[in-house]
Image (cartoon, rainbow, N blue to C red; front, side, top):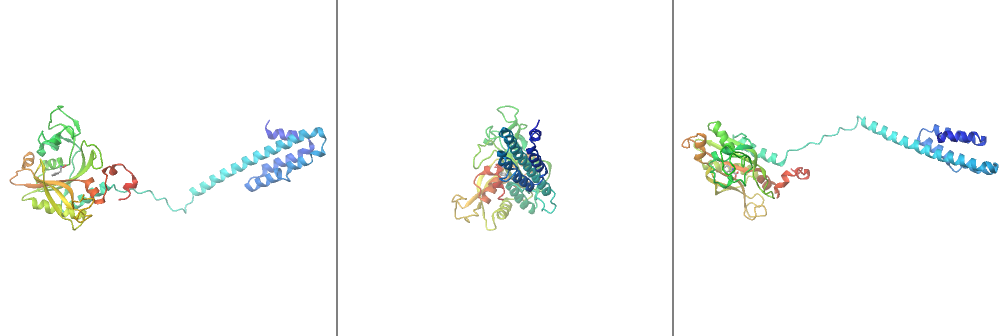
Length: 360
Ligand code: PHE
């Protein structure tokens, strides 16, 4: 028997209680709003409510009936308390639900804008560099990241004893002999220069090509090195190309990238596939060449490696070095981005922290 039935039954045996109990239970049942619940609470449990009324009149009933009447009154009080609390809880819940439903259907609310992503800074810089070359009449080519030794080293005039071929510097995917280099070994390209060979092999000059892409080296990762990074390769092969064309081209590019007042300078360097070879510096855009923290007091920033394509490379692709000449260059995109935006740690590009990425 539940509390309510017991209560009714007890009240039945005490006619003086029956009315009060029944009336209280009905008041509880009738209350359907928070206001009505509060009304019922006052009418039954309040200072002048039904329950206190029962206790007030206890002295008027025969002494042997008092414990039973007191028990019924207490039971009524507890039942009404619990029942009203349950009802108001229920009401509050269904109110919240209704509110949510109304909100979900509120067609007057402005639409929620989908968060729009943005291009990664490295993508932006790659696009900026390549579009400068496209404006100069170059076109884009690409090559595989998993590359044959032949294209990455051999045909680029890089002899087997060259340090860049060391097992310590290159990620090999398939090596034919453990301690020997073979042209059909497969590796992760250590630079974008193999694209030069692939394009020259399959086309005839004139060629004016840029090729952005990933390169891989077995580097210990620190503020200026990652094992994967981006390069943009560029090269021109035609009749009568000379170093003046290379310097003029790079000057235009450096000025577009770093500002119209920039100057460039060539410092002699060595690459197996260019002769002569040079490192190119651009005058520092922060201090205008006076010397600052970015250029480490030098006034110049190193931006790329380049040179005139070595005749030996032309032999590999079957071009006549007497007929054609060409220049080539390769620049590190992370480095360009770091110099341009004063970023001091290359790892920031790859940590995917939106607080960093959002700034560009
Ligand atoms: N491939 C060279 C490097 O990764 C850069 C380079 C490209 C130099 C083309 C000369 C010509 O360092």
